[in-house]
Image: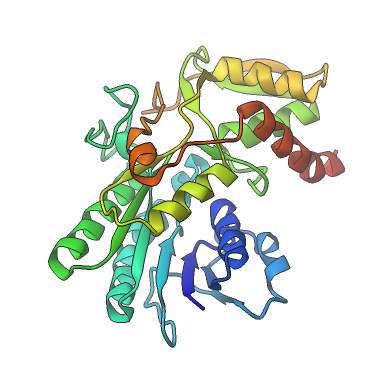
Length: 315
């Protein structure tokens, strides 16, 4: 039985990865310090004999006994509301945490997949964003703590691959959504669902003409699984190229929820907020045979069913 360590295991994406690897017959070690993760996301796995959980901050030395085949590094605050509150922790988990896990991978002769992000492209001057684009990032702006932490992750992963011959994989994740997102996450989808269900104003920044491309979490997990098992070590975009303006998205959510009290309110654009976001997934198609399968309509319906259970009971 193959053994995999998943950091950030109690987070939104990390918990779905734990489910997938358990279903594929792996022994899963989940690790999280719960500064943004929620233990409820993985507590259904606790009775399983092939799942272990460790409460640990990977910015500190990481020890795993016995053999280890794979590491997936998904530990990090990932929403602006989190990394603006925890800038130092965000930088440390991206630098010290990644260094610790690369060292562990080297020690165990394990393959490691690093969770990078579309934020490495910053506020892009190229559209759609392809992997050869180096990005347009403000290193000292409010978003720089996350963007540069992820860019450093990629750089040190490539250094370990080149210098030590370590098996590394890098996934650049675009906007992802689905069950287990935190209500108070601060990102657009949980904010819109929460506001629409409560009949509040959906907060649109600027005029709402900035674009995003939303990928359902099951599609993302499939892409990550294929990338881990592939022979490709350079970064790969995983996301859904179906692009939509934030204003259009707000109306889709309001139409789905159907609360007549929901309405649009406008706030100024945040500093360095990307104006466009759409992945070029040519590389994922060619190398992994991957492309998203879940339509936004179907994914939003599944996600709405989840948010009704976590928002509506509190109204």
